[in-house]
Length: 239
Image (tube, rainbow, N blue to C red; front, side, top):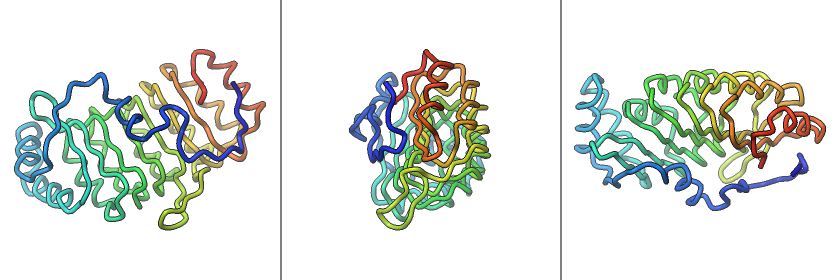
């Protein structure tokens, strides 16, 4: 079913509830909820990855200052899930700290004032499958780093043009150049992205051979452009 390209949506249609959306991405993964203590994080990271101890200590110290955070680990005690959403204290320095969790599979930083420069450090996250940066300051520059995360299966870059505290442009800042970078993610199954890209830009997304679900929002994409993409990718559910 086609949707009006100009329609404003604060919450995506699938799933509608943010908590349900997070659960959807983790329901097939057996995890154990852990308290975010410095000792537990440092122990799991040091045991699993040759990261200098001083870097681990710095990472855990930065994460400890966040008021609301949710972590999960697998049966071996490795941190695989981290949610630090809706916090003004989250910065690109925080992302550098997160990069010292080498077994991280899911990361959420929704409604956080980050511009994505810290994503350069995510090259260390070689198991990351879910990245949700809805309502941040992410633009094409950040996509140069995200394009290195070849294990990604779920990517949300909607509303990535914040206008101030609690305000953002639903159409984001991504351009055709950014979409070309997204199209290099070979394992992507779900893509949600908004920006200034055009009909010509979205044609690059046909390179995503494993894509199953997609949401696109842009003032510059026409119904004809969406129809072309639907015809070219009949196996993809458009939201």
